[in-house]
Image 1: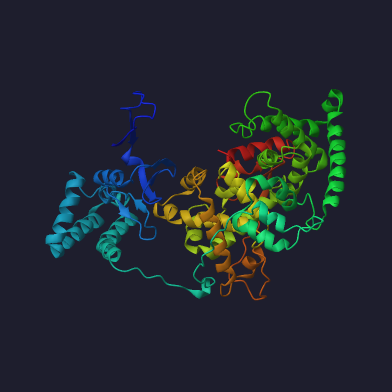
Image 2: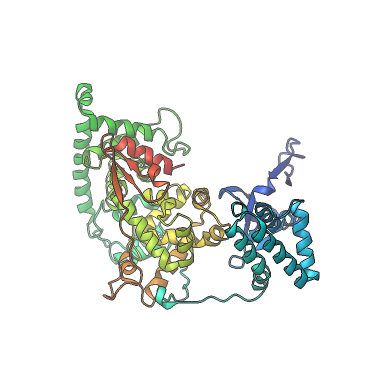
Amino acid sequence: MVNAVGRRNRTSSGSNESQSRCRSVRIEVAHLKSFRVTRNRQQVTLMERDGTTHSVFFFQHGNADCFVAALKGNIKTVRSKKDKHLYIVPDEPESQLDRSFAELELFTENTTDVVWKFVRNLHHRPYETTLETFAKLTDIWLFKSSEQRREEEVAELLNRSLTLNETSADAIGEEYAVVDLRNGPLLPPRPPAPRGPPLSIEQWAQFQDEDGHIVEVEILKDIIFRGGVVPNLRYEVWKFLLGYFPWDSTHADRQKLRKQKVEEYFQMKLQWRSITPGQEQRFSDYRERKSLVEKDVNRTDRTLPFFAGENNENLMLLSDILMTYVMYNFDLGYVQGMSDLLSPILCVMTNEVDAFWCFVGFMDKVCSNFELDQAGMKQQLQQLHCLLSVTLPDLSAYLEKHESGNMFFCFRWLLVLFKREFSYQDIMRLWEVLWTDLPCPNFHLLLCVAVLDTQQHILMENNYGFTEILKHINDLSLHIELDSTLSKAEGIYHQLTSAICLPDVARKIIGLDPLGGPDTLEQKEPLQTTDIDNGLKVEEGPESLETLTFSPRTGEVAFERSLNLNYL
């Protein structure tokens, strides 16, 4: 057990209440898999063996050196060779060695004593000890009955014994990487991609002529891509980014257009508000959508002051806009997660009509995420896997080996466009960056690759399996640094565009013209599906039978259940 004690200073009011308060942090060392020291050694993130993040500690006064030293004094740690901030807690080798000998039933006495006698003798008498060990194994092989023999285990033990010292020697020596150009493209070094300041009110005025036309739109978008928009300007700029107002419209055009949009909105709103209780009873599709909206609105961003409290009028606006969207696009209707996308827009616009039409523009960009057959989500997961295979082939191969090549652990990221991964202010800035459609189509997939690039060594060196990967990725929520991730994603884009022999399938994903040659990286076949009891179940991956299941007979109710599992 490691105890870290922090003491609070006396408050400015002079109160004695917190003068000698201590907070004890208890960590079960046996469950610790690794820890990461970042932010000028002021932040320590502890990760457990099941893939979850135990805690994140920030040392406001000083740094974490004393805490890390206390950890190292109680447990053995190995610093990662690929991530200088990551420290791995290795498995105890003796437990594996003891277990190997115990399972082979080589000795009747205590196996631990025999094992370490063997290890100690190996240093002093390597030749004699090796012959003695082979003699014991030969005795088992010749004189034990066939039922008692464990050929595979004996072979594994011999191989492990013969390679034990080789592994230690290799770890001390230099590392070499073999690059095979036949297996993938040659990527150049990743260039830096610095971020910039947000679009200011003064700059925004400079991009408008006297009639209100927006001039030099591409330059304006580049500024927004680099740094976003200052908060008090979002009310105006978002209407252009989301297609509510055309870029080439004048002040007069926009006034006329808004008047038309107000009338159209309230016509659609009147349609669903005028449905009588009797009609609703005979209109099952409408009734189910209304029920889903009511449930989701009551649990959307309720911790924010804008939506906090009972009988909040803004919750009523949120519900009315979503119900009106059901009438606007009844084929799609309402699916869980849409309220997450509308919430920040309503906070910025505050006006019901403006928020609705901006939401329509947003849904036009991401509506494929909410299709009942989830074809859009499956395609994005396949595209993400393709980009990962090109950019981080080692991680891609690792995920395949650990039943995570389907990328389902990124499902929540894509479904609501990182809404659950960043703070409210950060998600507004991220979305306005993505709405510029720069520097390429599917830039949000490169953002996923950038996050996985940051987590690569943690996932691989901790030897996480599917469950641990899923837990670890979920625990990243509110712990991803936005600017550095955006910068890394843009760097990956420039790296791919400069790559030699980039496969056509990857080129198409990021908007490059295909070269016309044979791809060295083949796109995976669509996920195979089979009909089971008139319902559709995705067959790839053990987790998919739960997370991606729906039935045509129950429609969105079943679809909601599948998404709920991904929100855990």
